[in-house]
Structure formats: structure tokens, C-alpha cells
Image (cartoon, rainbow, N blue to C red):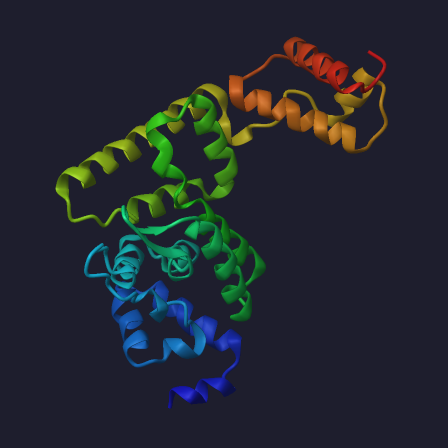
Length: 267
């Protein structure tokens, strides 16, 4: 009777999917909707993750991995939707190379696909935006070993209110059966979260903003509201991310140097 879903509203389908996802063990239900073909009717990206295994360049079953990630996340709808959709860009980006199977930029492709699917299922806009951001950022952590404090600040700023969920998704995404690799990834994640906590205590990362506001920029440079004010604030914010906290006197010096370089204002 799966074809009868055509007469069921998208809102009803998304409501049932939401209930399934926040259940104690959602993987069982998700396997059923894939094995019965039901998922093809409302979430075809999910069965598409059962990629044909390459006998030479072996890689993990993406569908099996996805279900494991969903199970490892706490029963938060946004988080579990992100876990469900975090790798849906892999089939479209899959390439077999001499180095093995690769999925370049699957997070970018997956974020776009997630937005389209969640909109089709009529999820609220705020849910769609949060899930898309998590899908888009879920690989960011993989370059962490070489991050500076500035990179940590940018990670916190980009994640915004989703930071805790992003950290949890990153942890859940580690489903390797290699104990040594699992320990290494866990240690890196622990280190990142400790650095975030330390910087947050020292710098109030959650309240990060440019060291001057728009009114101060306009008054100091003698310019009216417009794009130049936004560009000046963006520059000040980038310097803030790079250096950490900046006092007002130093902020004005930075603003003057930027304005002189761009021929803005009369100072």
C-alpha cells in the first residue's frame, strides 16, 4: 500500500517521520521503511545511501553508518534529522580513485539536498535552516589538528546556537571499528571542546561581535549609513576573530588603517 502515500499530506508524513526519529531506537523503523520500499515514496535519499560496494576500494556501508549515527545522537529532532541527512550528498559525489573511494564536497551537496527534501516535507523553516547548517558543517572538525585559536573562534561563531549539537553530531559520526582511530578522534574532540570552554571563559565567545558598533564607525569616519559601514564592521570582526578581544582605542586604529586603505571617510 506504499503508493497510497500519494494522498497523504507532506505535513502528516513529516510528523510521523519526526515521531520515528525521536523514538528510543529509530534505526529499526528506518530500516523497515527502506527495506519495504516505503522510503522511496517520501525520502528516496535514504535508500540511495545503500551504495554498491566496490570490491577493490572497500568502504563502509553509508546507509548502515547513517543509521548508527542517528542512534548515537540524543533524541533531539534537529540533531537526528541532521544525522539522518548528513551523508546524503555521497551518492552524487562518489568517485573511485587510485587512493580509494572519495566524496569531495559531499557536505555542500548534501546541505542543498537536505534543504530541498525538508522543504518538500514542509518542516518549519527554522528546523530546515538548523539541519542544513549542521549538514554543511559536519566535516569542519576533520581539519582540527592544525587549528589556531582564530580557527576555533570561527568554528564557534559559524556554529552559533548549534554548537553543542554540532559537537555531538561530530562525535556520533565516528563509527570506525578501529579502536586506535576511535581513541584518537575522541581525544581530538575532547581537546577542541576544552579549548572552546577555555576561550569562552576568557573571551565570552558566545557574545562575539565587532569591537565597535555601526554608530561608532559612522561617527568616527564621518560617513552615512551604507555598505561601507557593513564592510568596516566585517573587517573589525575578522580582526577580532584573528586576535581575540580588542579594546576600543586599538579598534579605532584598526578602523583608521582600513579606511585609509580603501579611501573611505575623511580621517
